[in-house]
Image (cartoon, rainbow, N blue to C red; front, side, top):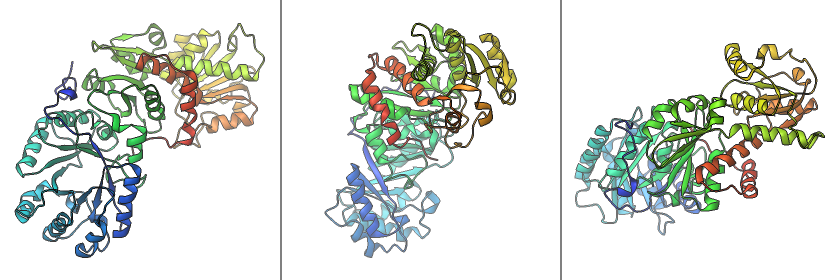
Length: 538
């Protein structure tokens, strides 16, 4: 059942006002006027629609000397001029009168948009009375760096801003949990005037990508990494090229990866490119989720059509789904959730096929095996980890006839899974001295060794000498310390990237209802090593 903040009742296509396509705005934060003008040109080259000129970032700014340089025509992009005071999150520490005069001068020099804060909007409006050029739109903004108020409070804030005579409303809040963004989506859809509504920090990241779906006037994308003007701001290139923001509209379906963390994931790169390649009207985003049930209950619209599920939510997903595929239920973990048209959530597991087939093919490529029998049959198969991925690997290995051993940092968790599988349980400390036979297979399903903790490994190099095959579910980096040291010991190594690709193929078919083109999908995946991993930034 939807909560009061649920987006289940929000139908973007039924928004009260027909809206133009949301624009991509690049903040120019250079310290010198000519450099800021160069950033404006660089933003145009990226494909941005407008540039925000952050005058408060300029060192030694002299309006009458510097503004003609920054706003010189012809300009490659429309200019949004902001002179943000420190009390509203900016860098300016002077008096309002000097700041207002600079903003008025920017208007006179042809700035297309000027931003002023709600707290001083009435004072500014009196100053510019009768002096604002017709081609300049006034943005009145409010920033909350602590939280996101209730939907009712946000609606009242919109009314306050409208009452100042603003041409465009801007509200930026802060997410304490991802469900806060749903309140902003409601405000965007129902607002009667142009509105910029964004939720800051990594839990609010989806507000920056999905604003076109709900009628937002613009969203901000930085010139490059390190040039962000607000927490969790993506780059303009990510918005345009990775998320295909120009194509996002009211009818766009939303998919994404649910996890904590999700910043390391390459799933948005892979799935968005795959969607684009087949003309599927959808976008795939990262969902940083603390409470899975609350998230699914809040984003209950049919437009939120499917999810990948990763650490630590795979087991909770079984309980949150209305129906669970028998294999996923037997495993006790779900990594794929589909929302049917009737609203019911159905859970699947594509991890076990992806991982087991990758390990089997890795063995077949390095050993002579019976083509009619799984190369796992009869082998001792040690699984590190007892979470969702561990359960999938243990289930899959047992199904193939392997003798499965579970090792986990917490023995009770290892024993619980081992009892289900019918094998022994060990602690990680025990595993250091565990070598009952040669030719064993090791599968790490924990996050040990994942970026940024790339120097960590679940097992010492000495202990790895007993293993003929080593698999690591971690794929960032592609070659983990575990795999590197296993290869040095002479083991056949299988990268988690192969599991990632194979399980994603299964997810793609669930998401789109289309058969996956193996060759095309792998061609997309092969580019992952050459592209930056997308991640929300703190």
